[in-house]
Image (tube, rainbow, N blue to C red; front, side, top):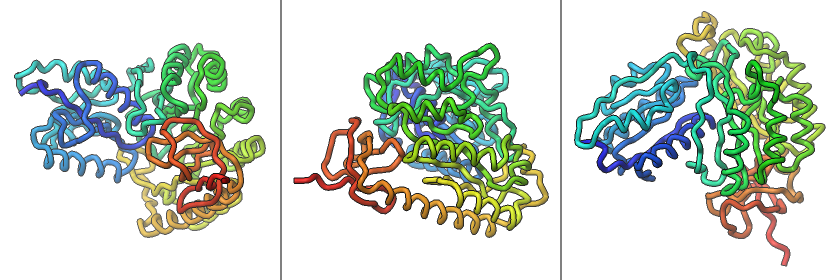
Length: 435
């Protein structure tokens, strides 16, 4: 049987860049005449768009493949994304997997599927090439917000030229490259007709515009978008600390159409561990950027990714990191436990931290983050904050990244000003309307 029915389902794993890739893929498959289904069990084609940042991410993908094959044995499974690029043969050997398509060939997925005439047997196979051969940014239009149906992710940058010693991502995403400025402005202009907020994303977003011959930087692109489109809110997903230039932070602070939200990966607050990680800044540089952001934007969300249990991290290193985090005005943290990735320098270290120690350090930082987050939310009580209403009924997201429980139901995808009346378990609550 061929692709006669043509119902497909895309499931994304991992980061916002992957979610953006998945949304672009949905658009291109729909353009080919396939119809999207919201039910994995009803699909003829199940696309798993994978992540490989940790052991847990890999496990999640393999469990999902087994589950899909069990619940829908006739479905053809196509595995793409970062895990597919890293270990294609491993995935191709799994039952039900018809195609394995690396990031190198992701753009060709509609063609690969179309090559199978209706009624003909499938000839899937492995399509993975040299990701470093890809010099240009391959952009596909995103028409829809995908899973989060009010805040589309637009990927404007891919790849990374850094070589952090723990990270596999440069090897599966290739070198840094950005979407052309005209194209980014055009896509945001189109999304602005349907959405209030667009999230700009990338693998190393702050490096947008750094290619040889380019004169514009990220701040320049944001200015163009503000001038040339009607988008009500732009949000930057994650920018390396040293790419938060004064120019960028000042632009964010001066313009209410850019969400007051700074997410700057930290990884560690220990100078020694940052060096072992091959991160390109010292703790004092990082602190300087975060404090500058807080001075310019007193109510901004300030978040970081932090890793615990990196090989060789002693109790003293961890304590230095904890104290550093304690002193800075973070409003939330994403805490990761170190996970060895084959082929990275850190994975070869003889100084692995025992898993129980890693888990305990993770717990300590999560508690610290929860306390800081609660203090931030309590500080917002009584304020009026701008928010976009979400697809999830009765919920909205503020510019400074707080989930709001609404006092009165409103339609999704609207920009509203909300008076904050109190805190909830993990967010804030809108004040009851004054009668």
